[in-house]
Length: 176
Image 1 (tube, one colour):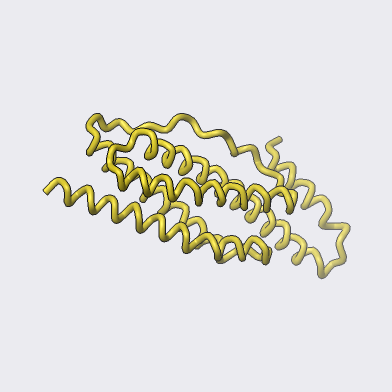
Image 2 (cartoon, one colour):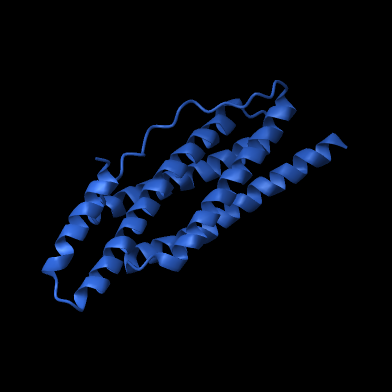
């Protein structure tokens, strides 16, 4: 039985023990807590992928601005990782087993400018995905601590997305 199925089976088995009016409330709390735990797990996993890509920007990027942006973003993404892991530990979040160390990320472009362009595209896309995840979470996260973390992190992710988009444009302008 998968961990999430096991979690739900325990939650459902406990429902008859609750007072009649509390069953709906407790079920809603369990579903919300599960969604919040999945959100935390997904953020950690996505953030690890971003960290891997940012490291590539530092080691394989050829453009000085790409390297500078990668270095700035990498420091912030390490902090995001730390905040979400600490929250998960503090709240005793049971991860559903998806968090893995990311595989080696690579970009197939051969030339230095093409590689830098592809890197900027990848980083912008990763941030768009993460922003979407955070915006959706704003609609269902009920834990005040997690809500505050989401609200503080979202502007940072938007700033990073905008930096990556600016790099995409700058790379396109270099072609002209």
